Image (cartoon, rainbow, N blue to C red; front, side, top):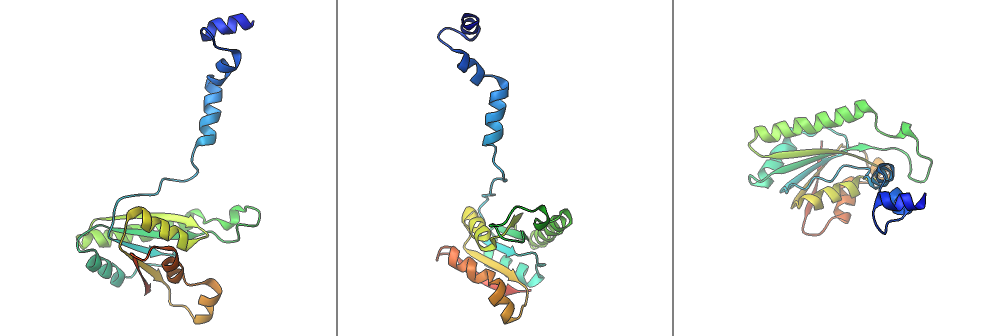
Length: 184
């Protein structure tokens, strides 16, 4: 039996080598090596408009067009994942399909407005618990020089409880990039 396996796989090969080359083993290896998330877009942009699920007002679009000086503008919308990372995973804490459709519609509307103003635009929707980290990674991947964070007008006590996204992004991003909070 061992001699037949050596003959079938070639000179000097063993049964273990033939098993490692089997299609099933390659499938298992490929399945385990598959990345869980999409690759971060890397088209360069001058300005990044970031929102945490709130609509982007036209004034922010005008400000981004003015700051970009004709260079491309990127838009990122964050779909919230509720709960903590310490608990058991629960699908009820993830954004629903309708929430994701709503986020994609926000990004598509912003892109249409930007392209209507004569500026090339790209967009993405990210779902995460850590808004500031996701925005900072998107800004770093795209090489932006300005980040406009759209935040809803909230009372001061709510900022203390939930945190200020623009302030957190400013802490996580390099000093070469300017971060501005824009109230919606």
